[in-house]
Image 1 (tube, rainbow, N blue to C red):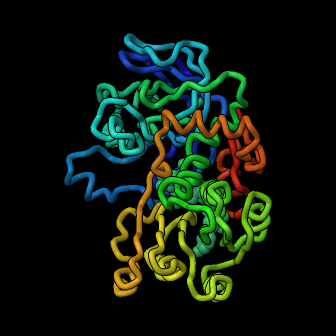
Image 2 (cartoon, rainbow, N blue to C red):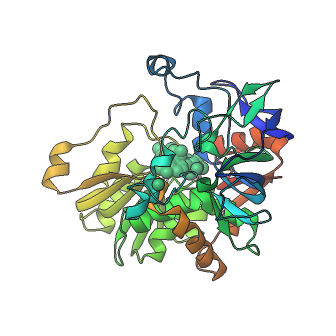
Image 3 (cartoon, rainbow, N blue to C red):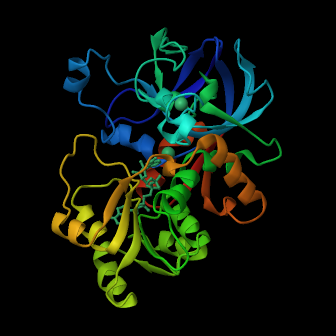
Length: 382
Ligand SMILES: NC(=O)c1ccc[n+]([C@@H]2O[C@H](COP(=O)([O-])OP(=O)(O)OC[C@H]3O[C@@H](n4cnc5c(N)ncnc54)[C@H](O)[C@@H]3O)[C@@H](O)[C@H]2O)c1
Ligand SMILES: [Zn+2]
Ligand SMILES: [Zn+2]
């Protein structure tokens, strides 16, 4: 079939709206009509190059060039067709994207760590998860890969059954889309990876689509203080609406204030969710955490960056820990429906996170608004 998609052909370029040819689903695959796609910062890293492996690295590994790629990994849609052997969804089902697939059988899935599923290997390379071949073609037959094997910036894509999760059909699909990446990642960064406890002091650095949900998660977990840090005033106001107790424009500004607020004890948990995590930001990121404190690294750092400013003496002597997280360390198959359940009961705010809706043709406008700090989350509605 033919449809339209936002394709990126190289670094420092704009998303191009092009005709996409999608082959029908084979065994273990489903054709999804995407209804809503979230404009997450992770797709922006392809434009800046922060998430593009250097060409020499790809060449050395015998891998094809990185571009072209169809963006989008946050999304929700409707299943149109299923291939042989698909059992968890049927045509007409509403689904959430899952940017980490969950096969249910690998070492990680079978031990409650679906965010580390082996089927997620090569999320930014090659063809289908199922058999490695391509179902998507642009420009008269050129194979095109999908961001996280999803490509929600297309009207339709063919994805592995492992990459979609059935959701209740009466839930608004924009809410479902938000939960598929940003909400779950931020919420899980606070509640699961940082293990926020009642009475904790939590600092969240960077209040975008991810950080705002770390604020919601920290507040729901009972944090005594939720300190949101962002240079943009509108983001700080939103944070106060969604559970923050204090806000600051920078980590430099937050540091003396957190010292005073906590009588020098500093934060129990620091969650790093800025748009890009540069190594030197970790100096204050780790200094904001006190004795026994946890620093969760959620934001994506430039792929080739190998240096970071961390006072290792203090890390050891203050018994601190730094933890990475993908998908907030949650289990997509359990936690996406669970978060939607909280939304249904009014305990998780989702509608309030959408700043603006765009058409697919307006995608570059949406990303410009993200760069300009205008959106908590922009979404594409098909
Ligand atoms: N680990 C994961 O599984 C995962 C999943 C999704 C997204 N991410 C990453 O999380 C990060 C945040 O994504 P997003 O969609 O929320 O981005 P966003 O652009 O919507 O928000 C980032 C926010 O950080 C703020 N910021 C920038 N520099 C700052 C600084 N020095 N101090 C304080 N605030 C600062 C910006 O003003 C902005 O409000 C990105 O790096 C994204 O790729 C990681
Ligand atoms: Zn994302
Ligand atoms: Zn698995």
